[in-house]
Image (cartoon, rainbow, N blue to C red; front, side, top):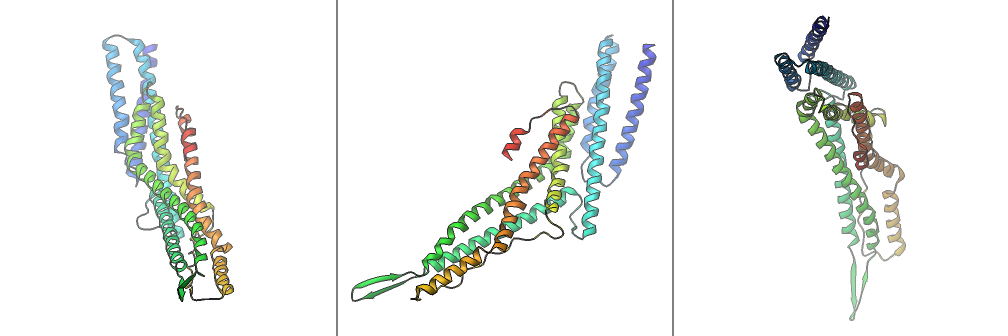
Length: 339
Protein backbone atom coordinates (compact mmCIF):
# COMPACT_ATOMS: atom_id res chain seq x y z
CA UNK A 1 0.00 0.00 0.00
CA UNK A 2 2.83 2.37 0.87
CA UNK A 3 4.45 1.71 -2.52
CA UNK A 4 1.21 2.64 -4.32
CA UNK A 5 0.89 5.76 -2.20
CA UNK A 6 4.44 6.78 -3.04
CA UNK A 7 3.90 6.12 -6.72
CA UNK A 8 0.69 8.17 -6.81
CA UNK A 9 2.41 11.04 -4.95
CA UNK A 10 5.24 11.13 -7.44
CA UNK A 11 2.83 11.03 -10.37
CA UNK A 12 1.14 14.06 -8.84
CA UNK A 13 4.49 15.77 -8.35
CA UNK A 14 5.49 14.95 -11.93
CA UNK A 15 2.24 16.43 -13.26
CA UNK A 16 2.75 19.54 -11.14
CA UNK A 17 6.32 19.89 -12.39
CA UNK A 18 5.20 19.65 -16.01
CA UNK A 19 2.46 22.22 -15.37
CA UNK A 20 4.94 24.61 -13.77
CA UNK A 21 7.39 24.15 -16.63
CA UNK A 22 4.66 24.82 -19.21
CA UNK A 23 3.52 27.93 -17.37
CA UNK A 24 7.09 29.13 -17.06
CA UNK A 25 7.62 28.58 -20.77
CA UNK A 26 4.60 30.67 -21.64
CA UNK A 27 5.76 33.47 -19.38
CA UNK A 28 9.27 33.28 -20.77
CA UNK A 29 7.93 33.58 -24.31
CA UNK A 30 6.14 36.80 -23.41
CA UNK A 31 7.79 40.17 -23.65
CA UNK A 32 9.41 40.52 -20.26
CA UNK A 33 11.97 42.92 -18.92
CA UNK A 34 13.31 40.57 -16.18
CA UNK A 35 16.02 38.09 -17.12
CA UNK A 36 14.65 34.62 -16.34
CA UNK A 37 17.72 32.62 -17.36
CA UNK A 38 18.88 32.10 -13.78
CA UNK A 39 15.43 31.03 -12.57
CA UNK A 40 15.84 27.68 -14.30
CA UNK A 41 19.18 27.04 -12.63
CA UNK A 42 17.78 28.04 -9.25
CA UNK A 43 15.08 25.37 -9.56
CA UNK A 44 16.92 22.67 -11.50
CA UNK A 45 19.95 22.51 -9.19
CA UNK A 46 17.96 21.57 -6.05
CA UNK A 47 15.77 19.21 -8.11
CA UNK A 48 18.89 17.42 -9.33
CA UNK A 49 20.29 17.24 -5.79
CA UNK A 50 17.03 15.83 -4.40
CA UNK A 51 16.83 13.29 -7.24
CA UNK A 52 20.37 12.07 -6.57
CA UNK A 53 19.69 11.85 -2.84
CA UNK A 54 16.42 9.98 -3.47
CA UNK A 55 18.19 7.35 -5.58
CA UNK A 56 20.89 7.09 -2.90
CA UNK A 57 18.20 6.40 -0.30
CA UNK A 58 17.27 3.23 -2.21
CA UNK A 59 20.92 2.30 -2.69
CA UNK A 60 21.63 2.57 1.06
CA UNK A 61 18.13 1.47 2.14
CA UNK A 62 17.24 4.55 4.18
CA UNK A 63 13.44 5.00 3.94
CA UNK A 64 13.50 7.77 6.55
CA UNK A 65 15.55 9.89 4.16
CA UNK A 66 12.94 9.43 1.43
CA UNK A 67 10.25 11.02 3.59
CA UNK A 68 12.45 14.08 4.11
CA UNK A 69 13.24 14.27 0.41
CA UNK A 70 9.57 14.13 -0.52
CA UNK A 71 8.98 17.18 1.65
CA UNK A 72 11.95 18.91 0.02
CA UNK A 73 10.52 18.15 -3.42
CA UNK A 74 7.22 19.66 -2.40
CA UNK A 75 9.10 22.77 -1.29
CA UNK A 76 10.85 22.93 -4.67
CA UNK A 77 7.45 22.89 -6.38
CA UNK A 78 6.19 25.55 -3.99
CA UNK A 79 9.27 27.63 -4.76
CA UNK A 80 8.59 27.21 -8.47
CA UNK A 81 5.06 28.48 -7.90
CA UNK A 82 6.49 31.49 -6.04
CA UNK A 83 8.85 32.17 -8.96
CA UNK A 84 5.99 32.06 -11.47
CA UNK A 85 3.94 34.38 -9.29
CA UNK A 86 6.78 36.88 -9.15
CA UNK A 87 7.37 36.82 -12.89
CA UNK A 88 3.65 37.01 -13.70
CA UNK A 89 3.16 39.94 -11.33
CA UNK A 90 6.14 41.76 -12.84
CA UNK A 91 4.78 41.29 -16.36
CA UNK A 92 1.34 42.56 -15.38
CA UNK A 93 2.78 45.62 -13.63
CA UNK A 94 5.05 46.43 -16.58
CA UNK A 95 2.24 46.13 -19.11
CA UNK A 96 -0.11 48.24 -16.99
CA UNK A 97 2.44 51.01 -16.45
CA UNK A 98 3.43 51.15 -20.14
CA UNK A 99 -0.21 51.20 -21.24
CA UNK A 100 -1.06 53.95 -18.75
CA UNK A 101 1.87 56.13 -19.79
CA UNK A 102 1.15 55.65 -23.47
CA UNK A 103 -2.50 56.54 -22.95
CA UNK A 104 -1.53 59.75 -21.16
CA UNK A 105 1.12 60.60 -23.74
CA UNK A 106 3.88 60.58 -21.14
CA UNK A 107 5.74 57.47 -22.33
CA UNK A 108 9.08 57.92 -24.01
CA UNK A 109 10.84 55.53 -26.34
CA UNK A 110 12.94 54.18 -23.49
CA UNK A 111 10.00 53.37 -21.19
CA UNK A 112 9.44 49.62 -21.31
CA UNK A 113 8.22 48.95 -17.78
CA UNK A 114 7.80 50.18 -14.25
CA UNK A 115 11.54 50.25 -13.58
CA UNK A 116 12.28 52.52 -16.55
CA UNK A 117 9.33 54.77 -15.70
CA UNK A 118 10.49 55.15 -12.09
CA UNK A 119 14.06 55.87 -13.20
CA UNK A 120 12.75 58.55 -15.57
CA UNK A 121 10.72 60.07 -12.72
CA UNK A 122 13.76 60.17 -10.41
CA UNK A 123 15.91 61.69 -13.16
CA UNK A 124 13.28 64.38 -13.66
CA UNK A 125 13.22 65.17 -9.94
CA UNK A 126 17.02 65.21 -9.86
CA UNK A 127 17.20 67.65 -12.77
CA UNK A 128 14.62 69.90 -11.11
CA UNK A 129 16.48 69.86 -7.80
CA UNK A 130 19.79 70.63 -9.52
CA UNK A 131 18.11 73.57 -11.27
CA UNK A 132 16.79 74.86 -7.93
CA UNK A 133 20.24 74.58 -6.35
CA UNK A 134 21.89 76.38 -9.26
CA UNK A 135 19.27 79.14 -9.08
CA UNK A 136 19.96 79.63 -5.37
CA UNK A 137 23.68 79.82 -6.03
CA UNK A 138 23.21 82.43 -8.77
CA UNK A 139 20.91 84.56 -6.59
CA UNK A 140 23.29 84.35 -3.63
CA UNK A 141 26.24 85.44 -5.77
CA UNK A 142 24.20 88.31 -7.20
CA UNK A 143 23.21 89.40 -3.69
CA UNK A 144 26.82 89.30 -2.55
CA UNK A 145 27.90 91.33 -5.56
CA UNK A 146 25.30 94.03 -4.95
CA UNK A 147 25.83 94.07 -1.18
CA UNK A 148 29.58 94.59 -1.61
CA UNK A 149 29.06 97.90 -3.38
CA UNK A 150 30.01 100.96 -1.37
CA UNK A 151 31.35 104.50 -1.56
CA UNK A 152 34.33 105.90 0.31
CA UNK A 153 34.66 109.66 0.64
CA UNK A 154 37.74 111.59 1.74
CA UNK A 155 37.57 115.29 2.58
CA UNK A 156 40.67 117.05 3.90
CA UNK A 157 42.05 113.88 5.46
CA UNK A 158 38.73 112.81 6.96
CA UNK A 159 37.20 109.75 5.33
CA UNK A 160 33.92 107.91 5.72
CA UNK A 161 32.17 104.99 3.97
CA UNK A 162 28.62 104.85 2.62
CA UNK A 163 27.21 101.30 2.42
CA UNK A 164 23.53 101.53 1.59
CA UNK A 165 23.66 98.21 -0.30
CA UNK A 166 25.11 96.08 2.51
CA UNK A 167 21.70 95.13 4.05
CA UNK A 168 21.12 92.75 1.11
CA UNK A 169 23.58 90.38 2.80
CA UNK A 170 20.82 89.58 5.32
CA UNK A 171 19.05 87.43 2.74
CA UNK A 172 22.05 85.25 2.00
CA UNK A 173 21.77 83.31 5.27
CA UNK A 174 18.32 81.99 4.38
CA UNK A 175 19.47 81.15 0.87
CA UNK A 176 22.40 79.19 2.33
CA UNK A 177 20.06 77.14 4.52
CA UNK A 178 17.74 76.54 1.55
CA UNK A 179 20.69 75.51 -0.62
CA UNK A 180 21.78 73.02 2.05
CA UNK A 181 18.29 71.47 2.05
CA UNK A 182 18.33 71.33 -1.75
CA UNK A 183 21.74 69.63 -1.65
CA UNK A 184 20.35 66.97 0.69
CA UNK A 185 17.41 66.50 -1.69
CA UNK A 186 19.75 66.16 -4.65
CA UNK A 187 21.80 63.56 -2.78
CA UNK A 188 18.57 61.75 -1.98
CA UNK A 189 17.63 61.48 -5.66
CA UNK A 190 21.11 60.09 -6.37
CA UNK A 191 20.58 57.45 -3.66
CA UNK A 192 17.21 56.50 -5.13
CA UNK A 193 18.73 56.19 -8.60
CA UNK A 194 21.44 53.96 -7.15
CA UNK A 195 18.85 51.71 -5.48
CA UNK A 196 16.92 51.42 -8.74
CA UNK A 197 20.12 50.63 -10.62
CA UNK A 198 21.04 47.89 -8.15
CA UNK A 199 17.56 46.41 -8.37
CA UNK A 200 17.56 46.56 -12.17
CA UNK A 201 20.96 44.84 -12.49
CA UNK A 202 20.78 42.29 -9.68
CA UNK A 203 17.12 41.85 -8.67
CA UNK A 204 16.05 39.16 -11.15
CA UNK A 205 19.54 37.95 -12.01
CA UNK A 206 21.22 37.42 -8.62
CA UNK A 207 19.11 38.20 -5.55
CA UNK A 208 15.83 36.46 -6.42
CA UNK A 209 17.42 33.38 -8.12
CA UNK A 210 19.73 32.95 -5.13
CA UNK A 211 16.73 33.28 -2.83
CA UNK A 212 14.83 30.65 -4.82
CA UNK A 213 17.80 28.30 -4.61
CA UNK A 214 18.16 28.73 -0.85
CA UNK A 215 14.43 28.43 -0.22
CA UNK A 216 14.37 24.92 -1.68
CA UNK A 217 16.29 23.55 1.32
CA UNK A 218 15.13 23.40 4.92
CA UNK A 219 18.33 24.77 6.46
CA UNK A 220 18.37 27.93 4.32
CA UNK A 221 14.63 28.44 3.78
CA UNK A 222 14.45 31.56 5.95
CA UNK A 223 17.38 33.24 4.20
CA UNK A 224 15.96 32.33 0.80
CA UNK A 225 12.58 33.85 1.61
CA UNK A 226 14.26 37.05 2.81
CA UNK A 227 16.29 37.37 -0.41
CA UNK A 228 13.21 36.78 -2.56
CA UNK A 229 11.26 39.43 -0.67
CA UNK A 230 14.11 41.95 -0.86
CA UNK A 231 14.75 41.38 -4.56
CA UNK A 232 11.08 41.55 -5.56
CA UNK A 233 10.41 44.46 -3.23
CA UNK A 234 13.10 46.68 -4.71
CA UNK A 235 12.66 45.52 -8.33
CA UNK A 236 8.86 45.74 -8.60
CA UNK A 237 7.28 47.34 -5.54
CA UNK A 238 9.76 50.19 -4.99
CA UNK A 239 9.50 51.70 -8.52
CA UNK A 240 5.72 51.18 -8.52
CA UNK A 241 5.46 53.03 -5.20
CA UNK A 242 7.63 55.88 -6.56
CA UNK A 243 5.20 56.39 -9.44
CA UNK A 244 2.08 55.93 -7.32
CA UNK A 245 2.93 58.31 -4.48
CA UNK A 246 4.09 61.09 -6.79
CA UNK A 247 0.97 60.83 -8.96
CA UNK A 248 -1.31 60.84 -5.91
CA UNK A 249 -0.11 64.31 -4.92
CA UNK A 250 -1.44 66.11 -7.97
CA UNK A 251 -3.59 65.67 -11.04
CA UNK A 252 -2.09 65.94 -14.50
CA UNK A 253 1.28 67.59 -15.00
CA UNK A 254 3.13 68.14 -11.70
CA UNK A 255 4.15 71.72 -10.95
CA UNK A 256 7.80 72.63 -11.31
CA UNK A 257 9.83 74.59 -8.78
CA UNK A 258 9.69 78.34 -9.48
CA UNK A 259 12.79 80.44 -9.91
CA UNK A 260 13.93 82.76 -7.13
CA UNK A 261 13.85 86.40 -8.29
CA UNK A 262 17.22 88.08 -8.70
CA UNK A 263 18.02 91.32 -6.97
CA UNK A 264 18.08 94.48 -9.00
CA UNK A 265 21.06 96.78 -9.36
CA UNK A 266 21.83 98.72 -6.19
CA UNK A 267 23.10 102.30 -6.44
CA UNK A 268 25.82 102.84 -3.81
CA UNK A 269 25.72 106.59 -4.47
CA UNK A 270 22.15 106.83 -3.19
CA UNK A 271 22.10 109.16 -0.18
CA UNK A 272 18.44 108.71 0.74
CA UNK A 273 18.05 106.10 3.47
CA UNK A 274 14.33 105.71 2.73
CA UNK A 275 15.06 104.86 -0.89
CA UNK A 276 17.60 102.18 0.11
CA UNK A 277 15.18 100.79 2.67
CA UNK A 278 12.40 100.64 0.09
CA UNK A 279 14.61 98.71 -2.33
CA UNK A 280 15.58 96.31 0.47
CA UNK A 281 11.99 95.64 1.61
CA UNK A 282 10.66 95.36 -1.95
CA UNK A 283 13.15 92.62 -2.75
CA UNK A 284 12.34 90.92 0.55
CA UNK A 285 8.65 90.88 -0.43
CA UNK A 286 9.54 89.25 -3.75
CA UNK A 287 11.82 86.73 -2.07
CA UNK A 288 9.21 85.71 0.53
CA UNK A 289 6.21 85.66 -1.79
CA UNK A 290 3.85 83.02 -0.41
CA UNK A 291 2.94 81.39 -3.71
CA UNK A 292 6.54 81.01 -4.88
CA UNK A 293 7.78 79.92 -1.45
CA UNK A 294 5.03 77.33 -1.11
CA UNK A 295 5.72 75.88 -4.57
CA UNK A 296 9.46 75.72 -3.90
CA UNK A 297 9.01 74.10 -0.48
CA UNK A 298 6.50 71.64 -1.97
CA UNK A 299 8.94 70.54 -4.63
CA UNK A 300 12.04 70.17 -2.45
CA UNK A 301 10.57 69.05 0.88
CA UNK A 302 7.52 67.06 -0.23
CA UNK A 303 8.11 65.68 -3.73
CA UNK A 304 11.79 64.89 -3.21
CA UNK A 305 12.61 64.46 0.48
CA UNK A 306 9.35 63.36 2.13
CA UNK A 307 8.23 61.05 -0.65
CA UNK A 308 11.61 59.32 -0.79
CA UNK A 309 11.29 58.44 2.91
CA UNK A 310 7.66 57.36 2.48
CA UNK A 311 8.49 55.21 -0.57
CA UNK A 312 11.27 53.41 1.28
CA UNK A 313 9.10 52.80 4.36
CA UNK A 314 6.29 51.34 2.21
CA UNK A 315 8.77 49.12 0.38
CA UNK A 316 10.34 47.85 3.60
CA UNK A 317 6.89 47.16 5.02
CA UNK A 318 6.01 45.10 1.95
CA UNK A 319 9.31 43.20 2.17
CA UNK A 320 8.62 42.18 5.75
CA UNK A 321 5.02 41.16 4.98
CA UNK A 322 5.96 39.20 1.85
CA UNK A 323 8.85 37.47 3.62
CA UNK A 324 6.42 36.29 6.30
CA UNK A 325 4.11 34.93 3.62
CA UNK A 326 6.83 32.75 2.08
CA UNK A 327 8.22 31.46 5.34
CA UNK A 328 10.81 33.99 6.47
CA UNK A 329 10.95 36.56 9.23
CA UNK A 330 13.17 39.61 8.83
CA UNK A 331 13.40 42.72 10.98
CA UNK A 332 13.34 45.91 8.92
CA UNK A 333 12.72 48.29 11.82
CA UNK A 334 16.34 49.47 11.90
CA UNK A 335 16.30 50.12 8.15
CA UNK A 336 13.01 51.99 8.53
CA UNK A 337 14.58 54.23 11.17
CA UNK A 338 17.51 54.93 8.84
CA UNK A 339 15.11 55.86 6.05
